[in-house]
Image (cartoon, rainbow, N blue to C red; front, top):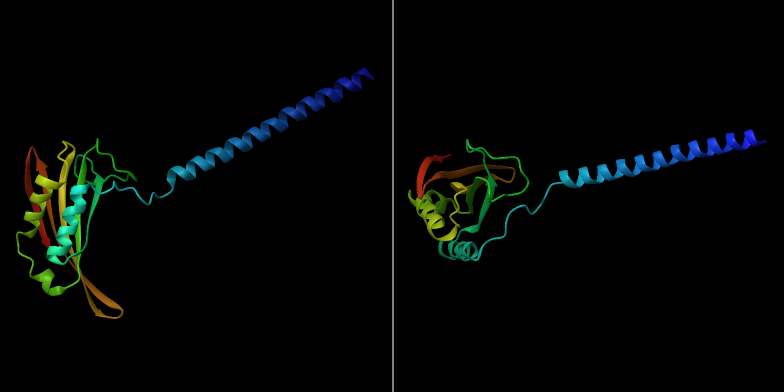
Length: 177
């Protein structure tokens, strides 16, 4: 009788160990999955909020030039100037500042003066953007989408890139597509 009790007690003890191991394994797996999903979920608002200088300058550009939605995009770059695949922006690492405007009128787009990008880049650098040693590049992009018919359109853009070297802006290239 005593042997049967010991055998039952051992079986019960082993069953409890197996059961608790399964429970802990399940909890660990669920926790790991939840953490993995939350870390790899796309972050919709990864851009820092506009500074007061940016807001006032963008509103001024909208009023003065009749441009729609001037916007900026900040992203981290490596030493070669290539974008890093981070979801967040870190100002303690090298970064680029990209300013973009969508222009709705072809006359406005094609009559932009040649030095418009230079003027905007210099103003942004000297008066709007905080000059940190990690700021490496400024991009100015103008976009215009021409509707050919209800199912076709052609995109046109002007892009200028400027490197920050010391305390100077140096124009890198100029494209017109």
